[in-house]
Image (cartoon, rainbow, N blue to C red):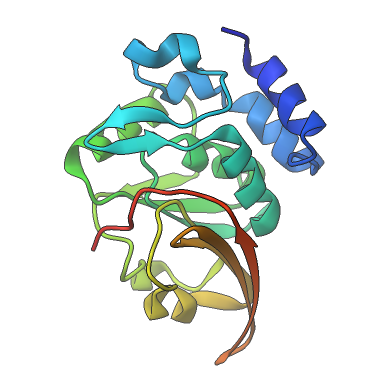
Length: 204
């Protein structure tokens, strides 16, 4: 069973959760709020859980790892692609604060309803949700200082790289690798690769 405090302690001891602002976001966005009732007793286990439609709420270790790579800051405008249960959106909402904003995309209609319902039960005033594909990003709200993708692509979509602000970061699973892409100029990027992860596919 456990609780959110025990989960956070586990992630800190694992060495994956390190940044104070991200730890505080985990404290403020309880994973239990985003897990289907049928799996609520497993909310604080460090593993992915089904949320319906073949989708999952990601393993806490993976979420912490990706947020540490992303390093969103207070006041950032962030694009959250494939928000699923809404947990990553809630965490990002807490990280960027009142002066920041999270634009969250989810293509599956049923999963969108589930995640939207979870977020609406709690106070996340700096969040805007869209029931659409993430492949094309959200050009009308670009550029974004940070982009987080929670489903695996064959490669980072060009649209997302185009919509990244100079100096910004895109964290995206590519097959079984997490890539952290930094935009150093209008058409130049620096990439780091981290192996050994598994994600549901990014759907167009």
